[in-house]
Image 1 (tube, rainbow, N blue to C red):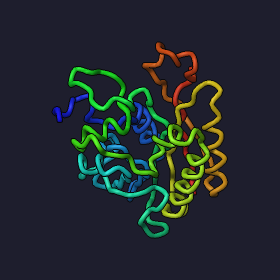
Image 2 (image 1 turned 135 degrees about the vertical axis):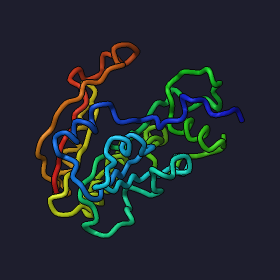
Image 3 (image 1 turned 180 degrees about the vertical axis):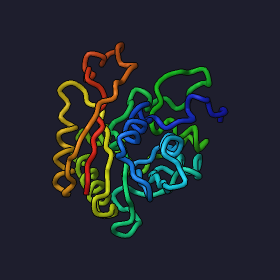
Image 4 (image 1 turned 30 degrees about the vertical axis):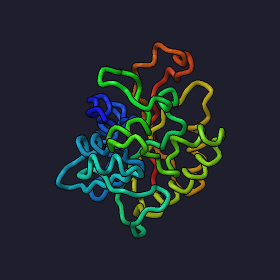
Length: 233
């Protein structure tokens, strides 16, 4: 198999610049143990938040990413966290994405010069150097493609938010970000689920998102930007 192109050395979904910095400057991320249940690569989280007063744990379900960045990631499932109750002082995460970048899913290979968008399984194939690599069946990136419905996506996230609530200490802070599209009610549904598992909404700020002025879906992007919210147990 060809060598891994530089464009594939990152997770397809990255924290937008300003999210971690903004949450940190507002005091939303405490000292102590911090968890990201949907870790991705864990690199940005560690780069921005690491300090002698914090311990960071980023959970990632795909071995391809954990094997690539073992210093930043812990293999696991956000819906079945292997930690005791009240183990963490804070949490920060983006929700897992469903049906991400399907335009890339049917490309078995990409030349090193290809600059197209990265899909989860295509990135995983390159990182693992295994073209037969299959995403974990709990990875929501394949849900819409496989079933045509988001029902399982919401079931998984309610389980994940419930687990996160369990492992956070009382008064533990949870920083959550979501990038809506026009007409998208996903943020409202996530907020309802968080309230159902008894998180309490406290505050939010907005991070401007660039790179969406062109393309087939440019008119569907929320012009306000990415919403970053603070919830507390």
